[in-house]
Every structure is written in structure tokens, then in C-alpha cells.
Image (cartoon, rainbow, N blue to C red):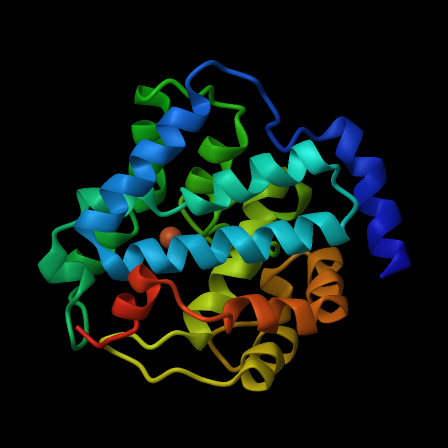
Length: 232
Ligand SMILES: [Fe+2]
């Protein structure tokens, strides 16, 4: 963990997580949040949890308070591109066709474009998290096939939080699993997820902060997230 913190601290200065002071940023985040709340309860709860967990990981990696705040906001917007995917595909209870998989895999690029259209810069953490959160550390991800630290830090952190939340959550197509099982799958792999997919420093941060991550994820649900945990 100490190694992770030191590494992240060194990286922190050279690798912006997207702190900025653009006018209207908070308003934009509030608007996106409001839209999510009325348009897709499951997606809203998912993105909120990913934001909170990303913040924990970012802080453990040595990011400063401003960077952590930017990271939480960025990670909370990472799946914004799913608004461009038909609900019948996102909520499908059964195997997806190749065309449907292709449609879903467009959401990182769509999300980045939505955020850029809303006024974010291409180097802002929000755009980076949206565009690159399905990239994998070993280069096997999408949409660009980036690897290692070529993947922006905000996206590498969001990717770990995203998989943790996805494993734990009840979805139309899967049962929820326990914290310990989710942790074991991320750290050891299960055939679909492999440790090589993730930045090892971020996996170390997850392990070090696992109790806090579990507590935050399992915190009493708000009215919105309580609703979201019902199966579709
Ligand atoms: Fe995604």
C-alpha cells in the first residue's frame, strides 16, 4: 500500500486527474444526476456507487482532495453514453446478439462525445473516465485497445470500481454476490475477469481499503438506490 501511495503521489503531479474550475461544472453534474434519477434508476445507483468507490481508491493512491473530488464526479458520469443505447438492449434478460454487443460497446465513445458536447475538454477526467473505462491494463479492452499507463488514471480507477460494483449488484441477468467473492474474483480472476486487466497499484489500493469499500457499497440505500435494487 505504501508503494501504491508513493507511486500515485509521484504520478499525481504529472498525470492530471482533471481538477478544473470551469464555470458551470457543478451545475452540469447536477443536471446529469437529475436526468439519471428520472430516466434510469439502476444506472443512477450504479454510477453513484462507482463514483464513491473511485474516490476511496483515489484517496488511497495519494490524490489530493481536489483531485479526489474531480475523480468522484468523473466516475459518476462514466456510463453517461448508455443513454444512447435502447433500453430494450440494456435491460435485456438473456444473451445479447453480436449487433447488440456492438451497440453497447459504443457507449464509451458516445459518453465522451456527450461530455465534450456539454463543454468538457478532452483531457478532463470526466471525458477520460467515460472514454477509457473499458480499456484493460493488458491491452485487451475497448474501444481503443490502450494498455498500461497509456490509459488515463481516472479511467484505470473507474474500471476497478466499475467491476466491483457490477459484480456485487443485482441485475436483470445476474444475482448479486458477496464482498469477499467480488474481491476474490477481481484479485484472482474467474475466467472472464483477470488481475492483468487492472493496474496493480489500484488493486493494492482496493485490497488495502476493502473494508471501507464494502461499508460504502453496503451503506443504507437512499430512496433512489433502494428502488434501483429491485430487479427489472
Ligand atoms: Fe461502461
